[in-house]
Length: 437
Image 1 (cartoon, rainbow, N blue to C red):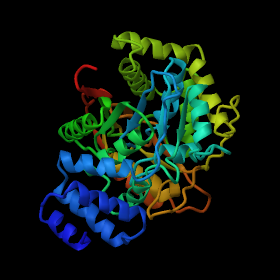
Image 2: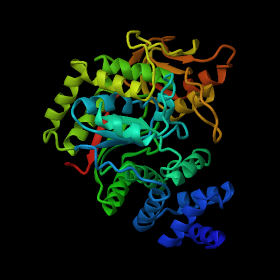
Image 3: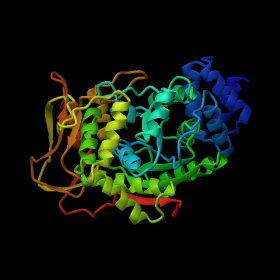
Image 4: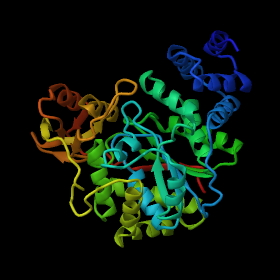
C-alpha cells in the first residue's frame, strides 16, 4: 500500500478498499506511520467522510487490532452505555450503579477527555487508588459481582483506537461521524458487548450541534452496528449547557455520589434515569418505559445503586470517604466568580466555551499526553431559563492559587446570552432512534 496514494484518493473523495483500511490500521499499531500522515488521513476523512462499508471496515480493523474479551461466562443480560460526550456529563458514574442494582451486567470500556468534553476515565482517576487499567480477571470478577466495571481499553485491547483517539483530540477531527462510529463500536465489539444504549448529545456543548446532525450519527451507529449483530438504542439528550452543577473531574465524582444518595441536580437525575430505563428495556428486564424508569428510581431511594457503585469503586482499588459530602476529594478553592451583568433571564449558554474554560484551567488536555488537574473546574449556579439579579453568581471558578482567572471569567461571560423575558422551557430528552426498542 502506498499511503500517499491512499491519502490522495480519499482527499479527492474516492473510496478505500477494506484491505487498504486494514493495512492502514495495522501499520498504525505497528508504529510504521508517522503522526503527521495519520493526522492527514483523519482530516481527509473529516472532509470527505466514509460510507457504511468503509466505516464497517475501519470498525472491524480497529476491533481486530488487539485482543478481545470473552464474556461467555458472564450471565445475561449484558448491556453497555456510551455517551458522545458533553460538558458536565458524568452520567456513566451514577448510571452504572443503578444498572447493576437493577440486575444488568455492565462491561464499560470508557475513554478520556476529547476536545472540550470531559472523559469518564479522567473523572474516575480523580478517586485515589482507582485503577482504570484493564485487567482481565478483575474485570470478569467485578462483572460477576457487583455486576459491572468501568476501565480503559488496556494496551492489548483496540490499540488502534488509542492511537487515533489521541490524535483526533489534538487535530480538530473529533466531530467526524465515521470516526466516532468506528471508535465507539470497535471498543464495544472488542469488549464482547452485543447490546448498547447510546447517549447522543445535542447542542452547543456537544460535537453534534443540531438534531439532524445527531440523527445522522445515530443512523450511522445503528447501520454499522447491524453489520456485527449489535442491538442498539439511541437517546438524544440536550447538551447546550452543563449537565448538573459540577464541571471538572473531582467535582463531578462528588456530584455523581450525591445523585446516588438520592439527591443531586434534577437535570442529571432525569437524564440518568431515562438512560437507565433504556438499558433495562434493551436488556429485556422491562418492556414499558415508565415501569423501567420507576425501577431505576427505586434503586436511588433504597440505596442499592450507591452500594453497587461503592463496591465497584473499591473493587478497582478506589478509596472514597463515603460519609463525607465531598467524599474526601480535594477541590481547588473558589478563585473567581462569574456574575450576571444585569437583571435578566439566562437564554443561552455556549457549552463548548464552558468546556474549553475548564481545559484552560488545567482540567483537560490541549496537547497529546498532557496531564490533568482533577481539582479544578466550575460550579454552575444558573440554568437556562432561570432569572438572575444583577451581580448574582452564575458560576464559581475553582482554580489553583496563583492562577490568572481573568481570561476564563471573560470567556464564560461571553458564552452567556441574557434576555428581558423568560425563554421557552427546553426538555433534556429530545427523542430516540429507533422510536421503539
